[in-house]
Structures are given as C-alpha cells and as structure tokens.
Length: 113
Length: 350
Image 1 (cartoon, each protein chain N blue to C red):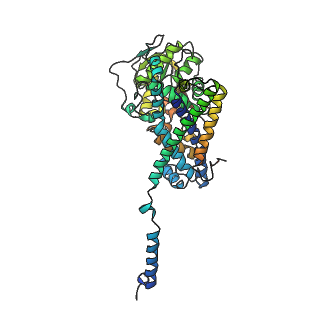
Image 2: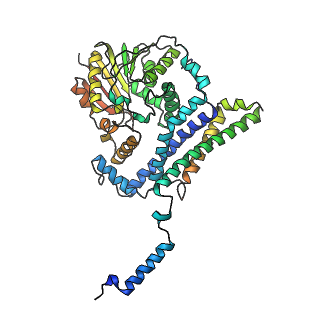
Image 3: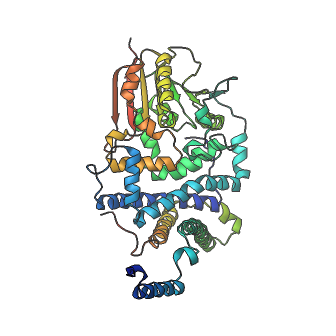
C-alpha cells in the first residue's frame, strides 16, 4: 500500500506548496533587511536624527540672531543660548526627539501607565 | 566656582551634546515601558529566577516581541557608541579657545604629585565605564569627561542632579569638622568640591590613577583657591603615612573595582585613619535592596556599559567587608526612596 506521504494527493499538495514558495520569496532568500541589517539601519537612523537636530538647532539660532542684529554668521558659531531662548530650544529639542523615537512604534510612544 | 574654564562650545558640539542628553531621557522613559512589558508577561519576584544569568535568559526570551525593549536597547547602544565621540568632536571644534585655558601654567594653592614607580592596578587599564581610550585616552580627558560628558550629559539625566547627590553623600559624614580628609578616586574633583564646601577648614587630599583627570582637578582647585593635595596613586596602596587622616571617603568608586580591590581599599582606609577616624564610602545601591526587575535592568545595562565589576561590587556586603578590616559602628544604607547613593560608614576604634 502506498504511504500517505507518497500518495498522488500528497504529491499534488507538495507541488502546490513548492509553486507557492517560488512566487513568494522566503525571508532568508530574498529579503536583504535581515534582523541585523535592520538593527544597523536603526543605528544610522538615530545618527541621522542627531545630525538633523544639529541643522534644526542651527537654523533656530541663525533666525534668532539674524533677526535681532543682522550681525556676521561667526557670531552664530559661538552663540550660547540662555534665558527664555535656551528653555525654548530645549523644549523644541525634547519634543523633536519624542517625535523621532515615537515613530519607531506603530501607535506612537507608549506610556508607562 | 570662580575663574571657571569658559566651556562655551561651538554650535555643533553644544547641540549634539544636548541631543545625546535628551535622548538619554527618552531612554529612561522606554526603560519604564520595558519594565511594564516584563510584568505584563507574568514575570515578577515570584516567577523570576534567583540566579542573575538565568534571570537574564528568562527576561530576554520573554521580551523577544517587545518593541519597547528593542528600541530601548538600540538607543542605549547608540548612546554608548557615540557619547565619547560627540564629546571629543565638541572639544576639537573649540580647541583653539579651550586649550590655552587648560594648558596655562597653574598657579594657586593646589599641588599634584606624580610619584615614580607607582604600580597602577591591572584592572584600571581596561576601557571600563565605556571610557573610549581609557581614562587617559585623550590629552584633555579630564576636561572632556568632567565637563562635557559628566556635567553636560550625565548630569542632566540623574534625578536631583549629580552634584546634589555628592553633597548629600558628603553630609553623611558623622562629624561636622575634620582636620584632614582623603578622597579616594577623586577624578576631576566633583565629589572633592562637595567635601571642600561641607568642610571648608579641612585639609583635603585626593587620589586617582588617571593623570588626565587629576590635571583637570588641579586646575579646578587652583581656580577656586582650594589647597588640594592631589596624588596619582591607587586607592589600595597610597604609600601615605599611617594615621594621617581623620576622614577617608569616596564617591562612586567601589563599583569600578573587583571585590578584592574593594577589601584592599577598606584595609588601606583603615591604615590611613587615625584612631576614632571615620570612613565614608558612597556607591551604587545594593542588589538585594532592589526588586528583581530593577536588578535585571541595572545588571544588563552595566554589562553593555562595560562595567565588568558592577555585579561583583553591588552584591558585596560592604558592612561586613568594613567590619572584617576592623571598622566598628559600621552602618550601610541608601539615601532617600531610591536608596542611592549607598552609604557605608564606620569608625576606626580608639
């Protein structure tokens, strides 16, 4: 008696599954974003976020300084935020980081409670 | 402080350091979510293993599908890999302004003694504490670590502030007056400053293995008119005269040491104290005072942060270790609700 494994019906099902596999690439064969690569990209993502913040910060400083005085850009380089502006910049930075990190979660930043 | 080094940074360095600091705050938030995720998976004091390695496996397995955990780990890794780089870059961007301030001949009452033929312990040469290049890994590592990393980044993420914690620890000394105080592992002098303020009439000595940290401590002391006696010697074997001090103290040094070195440090403190002198050591919270999830969070973070002796130190009974070398009236306790820092104090018998 033919075994169930080698029965015509079984062979047909097996062939169907093989066909399905050939048109639906498996993760290991075709996906280049393996778990390690995703982790590496995430590292780069955060680095990029840091670089972007540098630009955002610089623009904020430039706008502030130029708006007030119109003095050379060299002043911007050494401008040390203080008082209300320092607080405003810190608040903007914190909110920005929250947005970036929240984007790593499908429903936004989870809450502890 | 007066005559401080002008630490104003160029825009990029200033912005990057503030970014890293705030990222750390988000990491702290995610850590709380991770704790929630652990508890939601039925892991708690009753179900978690006693053995720390087994507990680590248990939690790691349970958190395989925790997005919060993955992101927390990813952020932690990024912070560890980039903090020193960002600080080095910030220094280089402003080297022209900073170097003359750091290199100028020091004048003032403080002294720095670098004895020859001092044997620095082998463990000190590792890049522990995630200090890229080691504690002497940059010509101006004292400034970079003390001002840029510690004050600007770490200082913003510790609840209550790192300087208040040091002042609180100094206030735990049993007496209000001391003649001569030794700060073991003083680095750039953040705790030494707290001692100078708490005991303004005391003669203060400081030791560390890092010449770069001590060089910056010397500058800070001279800029403030503090007559510190700084020495590059290991805390376990200072070579100082016996019974020279009436208070021997340290802040956040012990968790950097293997248990044998902690015991040797206590022995040296005992030798250096005059009869009735006090030892006051402050360090990280003992594991047995923390719940099992908090222990895991701390222990696994310490591993990533290259803290090879944290577990060994945090599980050591410091009260017993102090009593074993001869201290009496030994107390060991944590400050405040968080029990941080952890204080161990005792008296050398008369």
